[in-house]
Amino acid sequence: MKKEIISINDIGGIRIGQSENREAATGCTVFISDKGMAAGLDVRGGGPASRDSELLNPIMAAEFVHAILLGGGSAFGLGAANGVMEYLEEHDIGFDVGVTKVPLVVQSDIFDLTVGDMKVRPDAKMGYEAAKAAFENPNYRDGNYGGGTGATVGKACGMDFCMKTGIGSHAIQIGDLKIGAVVILNALGDVFDHKNGKKIAGLLNEEKNGFRSTVDFMSKTTDVIDNKFTGNTTIGIVITNAAFNKPSLCKIAGMAHDGFARSINPVHTSADGDSIYAVSVGNVPADKDLTGMLAAEVMSEALICAVNSAESAYGYPAARDLEFLK
Image (cartoon, rainbow, N blue to C red; front, side, top):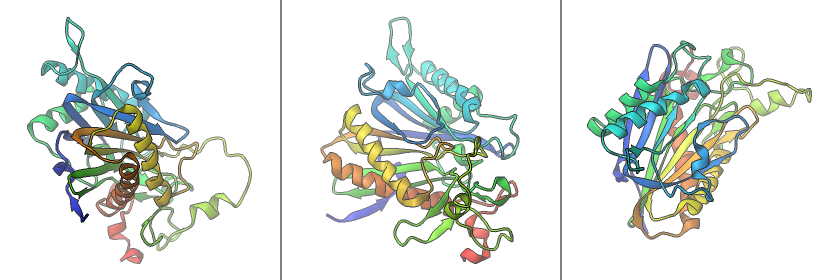
């Protein structure tokens, strides 16, 4: 069957809203299903900042969630989900417990505290604004928006030689099957185009007119480095209209990590909180392994989008403005 590129918004069945503080360099992006969506999660990084992720464990009772939030602020930003819950409760969306409906909202955050104003983090107000946008004025955009506002990459030498990245998306359709990915690229390592192996973002050299290899830099010594938290974590979501339950979606999320592994090196380090969600928002029958394979593909393409759509900001150059990449 012919594979067609579509917009992430063409998948349907899910609302996406973003809010950000451009001056402070942080924000959040929320994905909402009014009726609830089956969801899975696979965490490979050693330092995740997350909220209610155990809901997505296949042995837990919850069969669905109502929203997934990807944001900045590290653990400080996890309160943004409170605002999403507030908006959803106001609109009678959630798990019915008799006296009210409790929205099930899970969240993962990147570490962007070393960019912009570290005292400003996504909070309940920002989460509420993102949820409101999802319903009233869907505003998803690739680049320096939402949770990708303060994203950077290539930080093995600290923040002086990293690059600006952002949030990116990619989606495809094969027959009736639609699948896409949204990712916030904020990795310690370097980023490559998975199709040709070309490096497209990462650790800059001292003159900032070319790249250094993060792997080579880290290989100069075997000494133990106790704290690599210069600001990392890549987080993403796979969205499909195929019908899958939570255990299958956990497997698809795991296969989507192959997209990270093909495109980021090093990846899944102890200083990253790399996490991928997978959600089902339709009832199209599809093979799980095919869907997982495609999930890795769209995730790699979304990473490229996160590089190419970013704009230079906060003193960090984006790929589009570096002469040696033109």
